[in-house]
Amino acid sequence: MPEPSQASGAKADTVARTLLVALFVSLLCSSLVASAAILLKPRQVENAIVEMRRNILEVAGLWAPDAEVDALFESIEPRVVDLETGAYADDMDPESYDPVEAAKDPTQSVEIPSGIDVAKLGRRAKHARLYLVRRDGELSKIILPISGYGLWSTLYGFLALEADGNTVSDITFYAHGETPGLGDFIVKPAWRELWRGKRAFDDSGALELRVVKGRVSADDPLADYHVDGVSGATLTGNGVSNIIEYWLGDHGYGRFLDKIRTGGGS
Ligand SMILES: Cc1cc2nc3c(=O)[nH]c(=O)nc-3n(C[C@H](O)[C@H](O)[C@H](O)COP(=O)(O)O)c2cc1C
Image (cartoon, protein in one colour):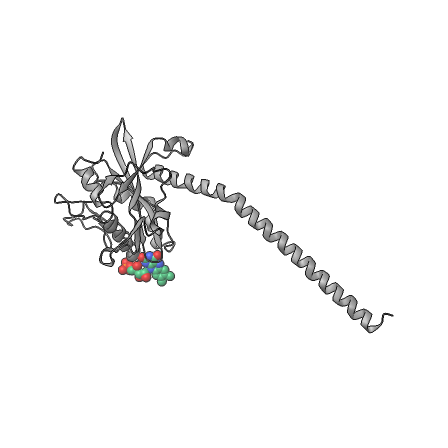
């Protein structure tokens, strides 16, 4: 029978070994997780780019499920626009320009004055990357990235306009955190369909496009500019209206769209 001191020594030895094995296993697991994260990062970035391109193609009406995204995307022309002047910034490479990173960099972004920050963005990049679609060399659609606050979350999407810089061709939101069955009406095909053919600016250039509460009434004089809201989810609809108000306004794409509408931005 072991002496009491021998027994406690053996016990301490077992505890130390257990701790050592636990430490080894946790180090092994954490290095496996870290390596997987590092190795998978390029694949995740690549997938994010493909998904973004798929969304752009879809809102441009060019998406074909059986075709290669990259091959289809060849027909899309990314361009960088200086939002202050509304002019193309052709010295900037649209492929390498990252508006999301630029929005975080104080030298490449501007604060949005609180009085006009209806989409609750805080800052925006000085330059935007948008996408042009051409048919037989002629501008046919303009795809504008849009974002802003809904009810619970920031909504990210694209608004597609016809070449006149005024008629809506489609709208899509590819990321949002609104409630399923309520605020997520913004991604439903039937609601998107309501946008097609609506106009953004009236003849005097005033922005009138927005989501109304409930249905657009038959005698609404601005019916061409108004889109049905969804009863019980008016607040998300208001968020979409705010996003349109900011991004089609003077501080957003307004100056660029002015040039398009007056024939100077093809
Ligand atoms: C759990 C919960 C989730 C909700 N989610 C949304 C939502 O995603 N979008 C929305 O507009 N309203 C949502 N609402 C309802 C809003 O609080 C608000 O009542 C509604 O937008 C007002 O629209 P109405 O005036 O058409 O009734 C939610 C309410 C509850 C209780």
